[in-house]
Length: 160
Ligand SMILES: NC(=O)c1ccc[n+]([C@@H]2O[C@H](COP(=O)([O-])OP(=O)(O)OC[C@H]3O[C@@H](n4cnc5c(N)ncnc54)[C@H](OP(=O)(O)O)[C@@H]3O)[C@@H](O)[C@H]2O)c1
Image (cartoon, rainbow, N blue to C red; front, top):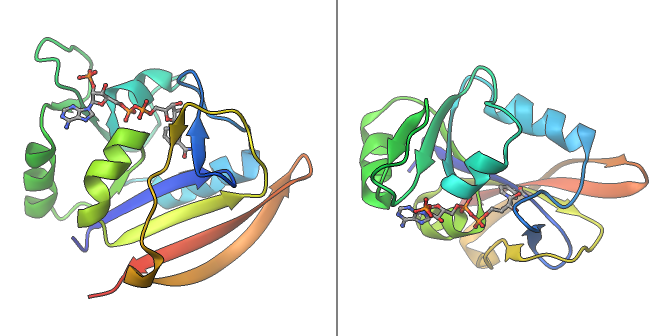
């Protein structure tokens, strides 16, 4: 879907999280995340939502959970299909922001993958799924570093 993108920061082993937390604190990558997602719709699994210290300002949140009794102030969807139906019928630009299970479910439908590749490894319990690189045009958008940890910003564009 043309209005669907995904954004993730991965370590050398595709690791993305541990004990429901991010693995690195990279202020310049967080700025990049903000710049990409500001005024967009962000879509996330219930665990990622609960891992956020607070709601991200100026972004519409959609939370995915199977729990029919889940209560929060954001829009809630209980199935992947209902999220896809929403994306199909809206003009909003939507960003999948994790976590692991949600990335996996949505990669087949996502046109643009913004992947920050961090040149470091950490112990992790959640990972970004393997993507088939031949299915994408891959652009290097830039690079940056925080606290001597280097990383590169890639944009994967799914081939038609
Ligand atoms: N490095 C990064 O860029 C990045 C980005 C985001 C997150 N993270 C990290 O990733 C970790 C969280 O990821 P996670 O994979 O454990 O959890 P998650 O994907 O954020 O959330 C999982 C939850 O989403 C709901 N869900 C998943 N599939 C569903 C489906 N088909 N239908 C309905 N609901 C569904 C379920 O909620 P219920 O259990 O309520 O039913 C499930 O427990 C944290 O460590 C976080 O810091 C890293």
